[in-house]
Image (cartoon, rainbow, N blue to C red):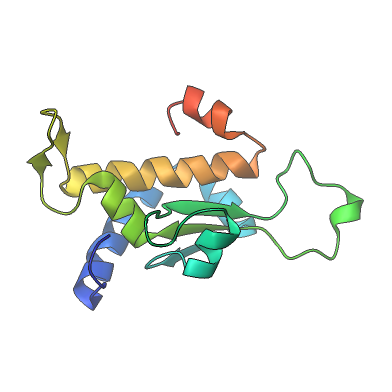
Length: 144
């Protein structure tokens, strides 16, 4: 897992996130008016455990909380509103870090372009859950 986040690291990540958001169509921006996007440094140990993950080993890039459009009904009134969370550490780790390099199998990893792609994929993955897509659906679409 990555080191603690500094103000400069947060600003760097958030600037990339702003570029990703700026490139999205109006429909995505409209959705984010209904389902707020919250960016945190990392998922808490309690959250990871509640999802069946081991906080000492696992990390999380993003999370959609709430009821998807496909499941909503009047029975869901009074529930907490849905939200989309992105976790800087999970995204950065999934991207391979800030520095571009080559992994054991010779594949390129890391670097700002890879971080930007991982932010985009994670954002669209969580938005997919808003629309009721399953993990299998998202994998098939390339957002797994």
